[in-house]
Amino acid sequence: MTQPKRALLLEDNDIDAAITCRLLEKCSHQHFDVVRCTCLAEAVEKLAHSDFEVALIDLNVPDSEGLDTVRETLRAGPNTAMIVLTGASETELAIEALEMGAQDFLPKSAISEHVLDRVIQYSVRRKNKENALAEKAYIDNLTGLGNRALLVEQWERCLGRSSRSMRKTGVLLIDINKFKQVNDEFGHNAGDILLKDVAERLKTFVRKNDLVIRLGGDEFVVILENVRAKAEVDALRDLLMTKFGGHIRVDEDHIDYTLSAGSALSAPVDHEELTAALHRADLEMYAFKTGALKPADSKDIEQTPRRAAS
Image (cartoon, rainbow, N blue to C red):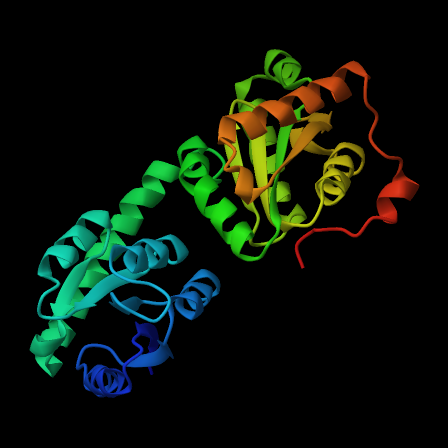
């Protein structure tokens, strides 16, 4: 039996919400478990932490009006098909919502079982195709990690989510020590194997909701959301430099490797450009490479709470 998909309904009017929920129950092509929210803040929280096939968004709710509602829900649920529910006089706003990224809009007065069913089908299909194209554009072909384009796209969203939790956003810039030497001595195939090994290990080394990016060459970036202080980022940085190193096997050769890393912390209220945060992390990484800075020793690291994947 097919598992029901989840639909989010942002609607503060009890009568309109009841009507829409009944129509969703009658959709012939897909059964939905409906999660209703009565304010934007609640909808943003649900979209940011749960997967929804579709979201039906009323433009005007107690804590938001018009396009601001669309903008915030799109930021919180970028992979969800958004359908805007409008009043009779809101057609122009609805068209602007489509230009912002919503899949469709429905006047509340025109909603019926068949119309809603059709609009949801088409909206979900369009969004799935959009997500597939975006994945190709944002994924590094060699490692399967996100690429620089995804990092730029997600930076503001990461700051926004950290801002809502009254926390900060951490940045780690990482590279592989003596990577050029590996390419020169063992060939570019060995270099590719090494990059893929580091990428796979980085994904398991951090939390699931931390963003791991291959920036280019042998450089990687990790974005850590909801950070309290730089010491928290520094602890992971030092772990990467002292305990992450490993080895790969290429034919009969065993190649050992270690990493260098630098960290930075950005407060959402500063609205710092991504390049500025990366520059500060790069300066710190260079200081470690030259010996001007030293990572904490193993004893100090083990006393610092880890942010590794749970």
